[in-house]
Length: 301
Length: 318
Image (tube, rainbow over all chains, first blue to last red):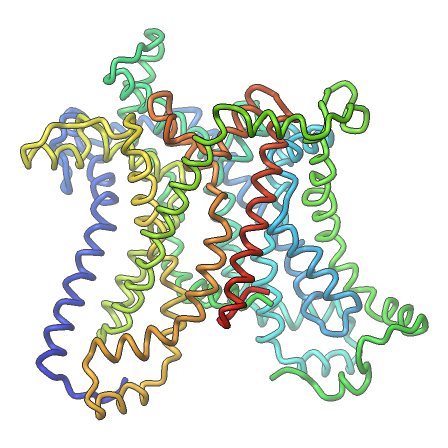
């Protein structure tokens, strides 16, 4: 860092700066810590609003009930499947394509780029896509969530930019001169050098799968295929909305609903923690990589 | 840079003669194989639905299919424009978008500027890591957290209000509160992530410029304004263009989760309307028309903003 002498004005500024940033930290962390604390607290304390940042009446009933709740476990299993298989498909389709597009010698390169980039600004829309999926007999299958988002154009561009700027062409040329085919060069030389890119792509695509609910909402009807986020939606939002609307005077249909609401209010917090924890644990380790990835993505051609 | 001279000499420019066409095709066949899955994907899943968009101009009938259904021209569009839903939907969509833009655009910039002034690398890194966290939370969990926090009985917001002497209030069912909750929670979630690009841009500012500014007697704030902010203006402009172009494009997912019967006067936006009419009521043709209208308006807006920005001499997208 540079050697700038600090004036008194500077000291005040720095203190103010640190103060405001600390407040930002508090604002971001407060709801999160509250949820975690509530998840290990006695539900009676939680529902009467006595739990803020610290747990009261240590109680892990919520977690026990979460792991016993079949729908959540099925959702978890499905989400893990969709995430792993989906991300593998993403990588298998996106990476080779991005590599090909990064080669200047590729004939039709500009046309192909336009062909793909155009889809970012114009699309068929919700209904025509639904009709297409239906006509392809992909409705309500395990495949639909894996295949319908095989390529994310933004990610594709990030990969292409990475291949263009971070792989020295001399290396590739040397390999080709030595008789390596394009495929072998790609697999044995380029990919091993692209670990940072792979990390970012796994993160972006993986989290995309883990957190998504929309496609499942529209395309799946079997409860056995439903991902975690849809189950969470029932527990966190639908039940909650129902009980809040009850407060506002709207009617609640029946006793089954009332029972579901009571169960939901018990496991809300632990369900949030259990579903968000994997992602929240992983991302700090990849921080440096995606910080660079954001920059690469912004240099789109 | 990575432009190799030998490659240029060998291949020259993109030659257009037939001989070269087949030579390059066969020489690069592996690259085309690399591209094949992606191209297939785009043709089927991105351009395929575009073929189906034509049902916006037809009366789509399941048994007759897209091809067999009859043309009705602009009937669905007229219905939409004349329905009493039209202006409320546009108003709701635009309100949420513009509010998000005005309130949310400056915040990551300010955060980045502040973080850039922090000398302690550990603290800076800590703030970054923490502010990224909300971005990784799923939208379902986010709305779940919002619902919990806003709860009239045990939510911390209402607890705080009551401690200050106010009445408790059910925010999630209040149409007047919807847009504020939507936008502010959006800022909470995305500020950290959106600041990354600005922090990256700021890190390329030459410290020597700051040193000479100090020597010339510039104050801290003056330096920040004239040096730091100046250097991220291109980034700001591009992001502003992208955001302004998406003003009629309020995403379905978050609004849908926050919607209920009681707040629908302000929470119903174009995308949720399309869902309701199309997926729930199966009004395929009509909702496709609405979607197409939305898409075209977005596209025009983006082109407009981009052209205006280019005319003003600043950087532009295309």
